[in-house]
Image (cartoon, rainbow, N blue to C red; front, side):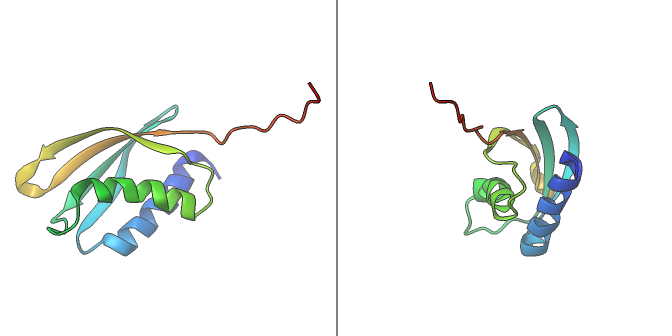
Length: 101
């Protein structure tokens, strides 16, 4: 499964859980950076950035080896329509060294 497929699985679960408040879709993937668009009414009692962080939690929950996922930038693109564009960096799990040094 390639990176796009893995991220699409994460976003499908995010949209299933949050679809009444916010939906996410991939805008672009370049190297280890992914740009995701969030659109919706967003829950007034939740923190806005909690939605963006939920992508990180979903990636870990699915065990898709995308963690650590880091929010690099979040931009309000269209306040009137509740649209935000968020750039993520996909990390890599550390490789354990088995050397006897």
